Structures are given as structure tokens and as C-alpha cells.
Image (tube, rainbow, N blue to C red; front, side):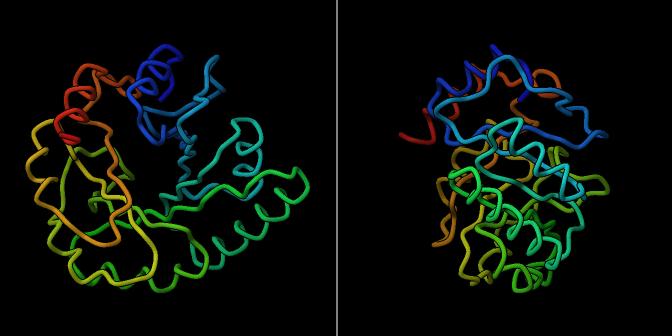
Length: 206
């Protein structure tokens, strides 16, 4: 999200989280804080191989409540981030932002990487493996997740669109935390189709 009125309208739909992409190569890149930031929905910052200080600066500038790591971050780097966030939050007396590690999935073996990150993350996001990070509009085979048994919940991502209500209704997993709605609900990069989202959320909840 990037446009203030679009942020306000999507938040009014009762969504849980709104994402802000801090990856300069992305067409959804947020270069500076919008004049309106969500007050009810969680603020999720999306980073791709960003350095520690950059992430910490954005946590302060945007009041991030969650951090999604969408690059090639190592378990050691995520551990260092978690420690730095814990220290920062003790100093500011604020809750530590949740850490979400995005992993690309093309086969069941890709899920083995979760074991290395479990001690350092609060959740995973499973996305479709593509040459570039995120926003591809492509889906992976959700049945691969039947082998996922790690103790962390996950967010389902990767090309979920308006025509996937029935498929989502049929999908079940004890660790499913939520679903990520992105490129297939946009009228332009970083601009969400509020009416399409409203219809989808209404149908999904019915």
C-alpha cells in the first residue's frame, strides 16, 4: 500500500494487516511514509535482503508491527534482527514487531528450510517460486503444504485472486494463519481495487 486514501479505504474493510514494500526495485516501493498510516490494521514492512539498520529505521519511521523478510536472509541474520528488535523495544517500551520469513515453494522439499528459521521467526509466508521476489500473480500447488508440520503458523500467498473463494474454502491446514492478497486485487502497482476486495472478503466470510 502507498496511497493514503486507498490505505484508509482498505483498512475500513476490516483487514488484519496492510503491507508496505521497502524494496527499491519493486513497482510497489514506498519511498517515504504516506500521509495516512493504518491505526487498526497491523503495519507490515516487506524487506528484501535489507541491512539491519535500514529495517530498524523503518520500524521507527513507520511504526511497523510486523516485518516480512522476502529475500535470501540467513537464519543467523534473522536471529540478529530478532535480538536487535528486542533491544529496541525494551528501550522504547513497545511490543517487538513480529518476524515473518517468506519462503518460495515449488516442491515439498522447499519446506525443509523452515526448520532452520523456526527458532527466530513468528510465522512463515509461503509464496510461489519465481525469478523475482513477490507480486507475480502465480500460484503454487497448495497440496504441497500437507507435509508442513513445523510449530510456526503460516500465511498463504502467491497469486490469490477474486476467483479463488471456493478453492480457499476447501483448503484447510491447522497452521494456516491468514492469506495474502496482492497483485490480483490491484488496478495498478500498490493501488488496491477496494470493491473487488470487499466482494472477495464478504464471500470468503460467508
